[in-house]
Image (cartoon, rainbow, N blue to C red; front, top):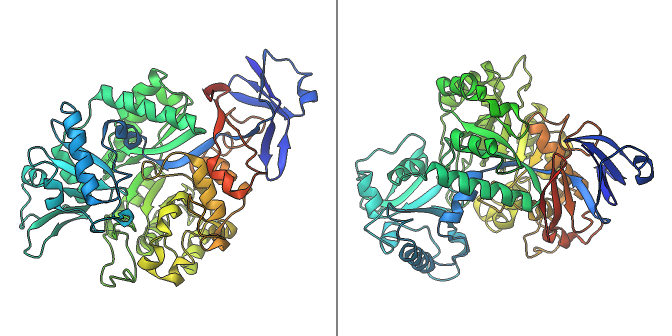
Length: 536
């Protein structure tokens, strides 16, 4: 079937626009003026009423299973004190006895945002006030540290003599007893005491999350839900969503695999499932975790934290093992993407990637996810080695409050270096790391361009020299993210031969006041030439 999309302002590339697009089935076959394209044969006309249309937005890194599971969990993101967390969670348990009978697990609190009471990480004494009858596990918003109650500690048989799992820590009080705080790989380890959701529940809440993605203008997501810490997905449930056509949003896996044997299982078993021959579900890279988060002070810092010089963060993946896994993936033709936030984690990962280069080149597009704390030499090395970066500009909304206190002004000035790294020529895509931040791409684009929080502060922007222009931000969210999944020849542009994925905006993002970008809402989301979402 041929459809003529017309009556809008189609973004082609920097400062170039078209009036109409002709689509056959799921591909663009012609781009041009309304007058010219109306001379072509078509079966239907879709009038876009003068709106601005950009290529379909592509979130390069998120966790759809966690976004979905949040629909069944207590939301702690708005809590501004430990007391509020306790009261809200107790109320949730009372209202949802069947849902919480085996325990409570959620994420979202952030001690840096507390405005009353003590401004600190929760501990076992706090969480015991919620319940001592069922296990309660409360992850910080980053997912890299959690606070648990005594019931969870007992179910996992954790005492002062219990060794932590590799790449994690069990924190202790002054007497050496577990204080209910666990970090990195120990978070996933203790969460095993609470049963996972059923297959039916996973299908339902992940479908809901994917359709929410369409409602905020996303046509594609690249999501880490398989074998990742703190996530809920599995291959079977995600396949079922696409086999039953429960969403139109395109999905590319980012898969945690910790041995060569697990990599072989992906290649030789999972990849043979017929659904991967369809255009909406793809297998993707091997995902690794190198360190933690800045907010939890578990990101790997070469010189330690400004206020804790002896704290260099947590290494979640030893360098020698990391090199072995990178080589194993490279030998199998698999891309590797790695969570790195601190400069120590970034430096070690860049070195490990080089061990897996083919003929001295990064042909498999091994990439850094987050890549937050950097100095100029590190940025130059990333670009020189053609290592791609999955940025989350929206992280600045919160991190600008703590960055200088954590790492100092000098290092802060070269961190979250969106413009410098782009100018150096490194491949870049944007995303949100949802549910750490909301899937909505427009606050993220605003953060990249304005370098301000969602209240429009600070005036003039936070280290504004690292802000990009609106064209660069849109490109990073479209063709840039597509490059990271080897799809740049068919997705991320409004051009002949490309997939007919568009995001129709309620405002002209290229010609509105800067501070209005964050408030844009998509009017329509079109995937493969079909309307996946339309706002009333």
